Length: 550
View (spheres, rainbow, N blue to C red):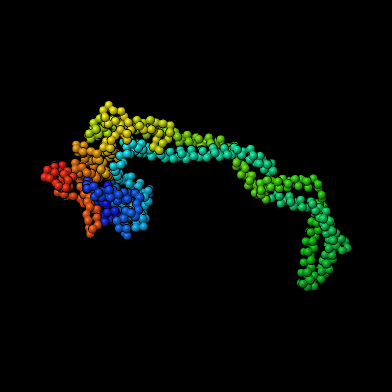
């Protein structure tokens, strides 16, 4: 519930602060006095966009602040969701800077306009004259029916399921597209994959094969040099092995004469052992050197296969070829397992669709059960508002399509005259009739929702006489369940208010300013009398005003 509205430096307002209470609050004033400015300021604090053109003094910032009592409206969860401090007396503040930039705060925490708009939808319904066009909007019609049917929880569940359903459908389409693309390349990729499978490449084999090939291509030089090395090493007369034996023998004779000779003798013995081992390996190597034409051909063929694959795939190593092999394996496997994957995805979709269908059917059933109640309540209210022959034809048809709020199509038709045919509201109802229909709808909604505050901006347009009294009565009834603030030109409605505020203009130092004040009982009598007879108030008007207030 709106408890206070403060405005600084907005349009024609210098500074204004007004307290509101529960019940029915009336706002009156001459045309052009600034009633729309009040709504504009309230719209700012509720998330409407603005710029520096709204500033009265362009050198100062504009500040609009609304205090709201929210303890009775179960908003703790919402505040937690958007990471705001919950306060039973919540303060929303909007600042417009001279630069045109704006800032918004909820309980001194900065927030975005989207958060403000979401919070607004839970706190205040501002109904202006042009919004009667919403009556012909299918989404609005559904919202009315669903409020009466108490479908909010079911629709929230349906929407969560619809998000999952759409996500799965998107994934299915992507899978099918990938399968189609993969199918087009499947034969070629399978051919390439089989080439790799047949090649059975090993990570280090190219280097080993190239070393073997180099060895076989130089077999004669290898054989010659190994033989010469052995000859030098083992020749009986001048061979290195024989010479080392002689040196070892000579040093062994003097080894006991000093530590130095002993060390030399041991070192030459070590050299001889190492050299004997080298000779043994030389002999083995020499024996193993053998030219094998078949092996040479086999190595050449294997290397050529590797080189051909590298050239074909524009790479220079077996590691890169193996990476391509793995990619081809994935592509081939994707095609070969695609049908199973797609079938599994379709099964997921079918499961979610079944749950969606069940929830949609429950929503549809609740709507159908609520239609007679809605129709009756609206027709009774409209009869009181002078539309005795008003009739509604509301029909629900469940379809195979998944809409944002279920699977239903809605036909919401109206007839204002006895024996008249049903038609769309915007085509068969006049402006005054639409205003009365909207008021009736809001009355029904107020009995079935927990919205704290509703503001009517001249919803009484196009009506007069006894209908005005009926409208005022309906607003009074609504104010028993919620705070109702109405801007009106009709004295019959103004007299029904729990409290009465007047918007007026005044000049201060040659500057026009808009102000708002709460009227005392005597001031209300004068204001209503003026609404009845104009500036020249008659005694009859004053008497009539007192009668209306009583």
